Image 1: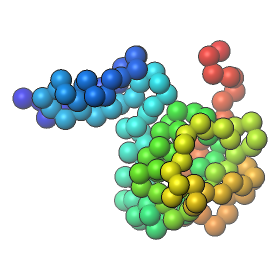
Image 2: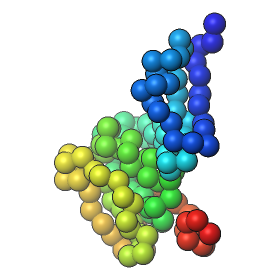
Image 3: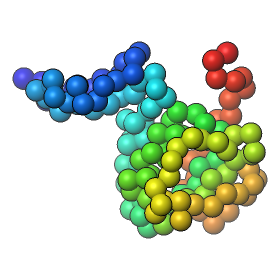
Image 4: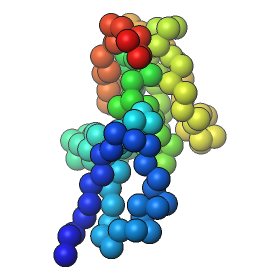
Length: 134
């Protein structure tokens, strides 16, 4: 018997179908819809192991907030919000497209790219050098 199945697919996954069809637990490893949930979970676990519980931390995300790893991390923070979320990005890289929960939205502030002060954790995200799809 298989203990767990990790699925990373070149198509959009039907999570409900996969969940009902599999006899083993399924971990979503990402798909073409721009999700990277396993990376987000690993980052969250590393932060909690090295720094402390996420709900007690001031967390900053700096860089290109449109990249899928960053977007997946934001989705996860909707479920386990930090004390404060600081988004540090220039105007052209702020539209992450993630709907933040009311709780997380109330804990979120924006800062200039050069201001990452007074944070417990800063997650740096590279800046894309070319637009998506090119």
